[in-house]
Image (tube, rainbow over all chains, first blue to last red; front, top):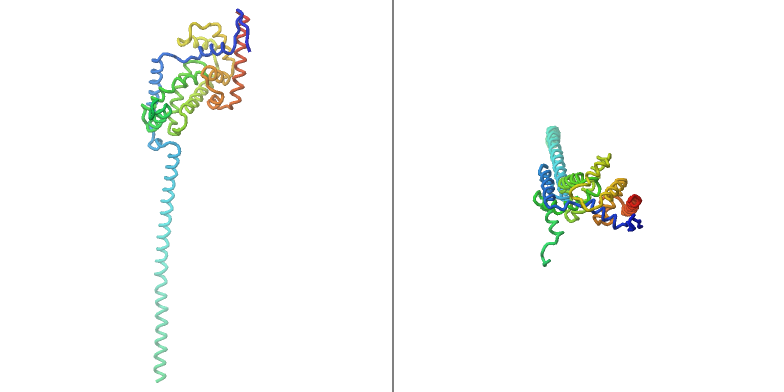
Length: 126
Length: 185
């Protein structure tokens, strides 16, 4: 679309573009950009130094986190297994001490009955 | 360029990796490389030169904080410009109330072309102020900075078609503003 100017010329998109470029032109002075860089870096320098794990980008950090979680889970599982084994061993020990005398008694009882039977047989069957 | 000499992209990649390791000098080099374009992006969104400076500073600071999340194989410029655009949009939202007189003063900064018609500039500035912030950003990014519709869409978080339509409407309004000047000349 073209628009007529008062002096007979016409405005068009190029005219608008030209004025916009002048309005929005970035500073051309090199010292300005040097000063802006220093200002940005001064703000950046006040930031806390990154944690060691932040030096690993994206997926590496995710992998490290997953590996750490796996190690913790394995440690918990191992601890549980050891505790269960100890408890089982303790229970077996308790059970075996309570049963052993009875077993011994019954075994010794059986043996004496057999001896008596043998003696009676020898005495009565001469 | 001779064989084996690193390209701009490779140099930038090396700087990003070094900055991720915590080398501030590498980050300063990235600032040096990108601050002009970052300023242009910010300036297209905010109304004043000072706000554009603040947006650039905030944008670089956000980028520094988020640097460990950036994948170095991506385009650093596109990532940074998106961050700077967001910082500029935040500033614009914080300063919703605009003063047209203050705006005219700001535009008479030492960086403007003194040969440009003051009246034309003033009218166009007022016309720009009547545009929505998104339309203004789109026309400046496209007509002044030369970004493509798709790039503008990514930067401002809008579909490419919306950027195209915003540009069309913004141009129409600015031409109307210039026609108003014609009737007064």
